[in-house]
Length: 326
Ligand code: BTN
Image (cartoon, rainbow, N blue to C red; front, side, top):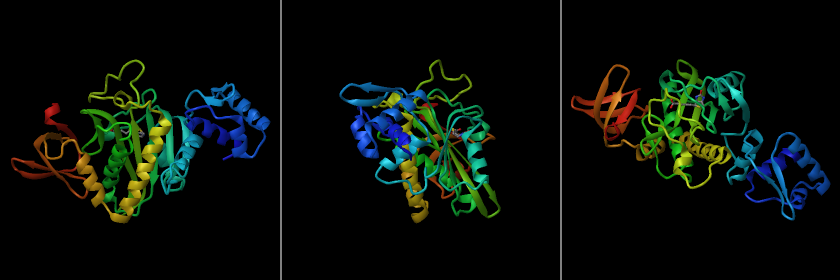
């Protein structure tokens, strides 16, 4: 990181003004050199204010690869995998598509793609995903040594990592099978996992994460049929994309390494505890019709085991409704 990037990331993480002396000391440069960098950053569009006797303060968040890398480095565990390489785009068709392009060009494992906007954001079951104002849209490239049939476990792992990583901002986040994140029954985040594989061999897994951080400025798009909410509506802290992205990447990093070392069992246990419908009456639409039953367990491949009047059924894919929310 060069001096200008250091100043930007330092100011973007500080909650109070940082003095020119302090920045000069940290970088072993003169105060005049600090001032030149501040001037150049302002010319590039950074809203940096000077408070006399106190120092410089960044007045709007800067969310990019530099600030996210330094936020991750600041957390006491520097990333082992997630976020060692970060690419930021103002606008993309879909961060999952870009992640797949990067994977095909041999990017390192753990590469993170962030998009401020997506023109063709994609959701599960072929749906459109709207990247609303001040939303978080990111995708991660993984290259686990897994059989293709185990890859759904990574979606469940991601749901657990999001639920736990975002818990400092909201304690009420729950998972809805397979990997929606809900607050009080309303969807706040979704996960789309895709892979490039051949029989028996996974080349790359793309984990795409979309989180509604704030309500849209006008209204929620009309084609969203599911009840939806924004994380900020349920958090006492003012959320920033930087804080949320670094929290979930750190949590992903921890869970991914637990999974590689200990297998699926700890993920499955944490998932079941965080699942809104564990042991509850649910209705699942499996693409052909509705099946009702009690959510009894999660199979090792991520299938939901549903106790129905005709016995236990394995549901591999579909849309689950909690009957108390119907
Ligand atoms: C769903 O709940 O249907 C999954 C939504 C996944 C959306 C994210 S946003 C980042 C990444 N890029 C995409 O095009 N989709 C995922």
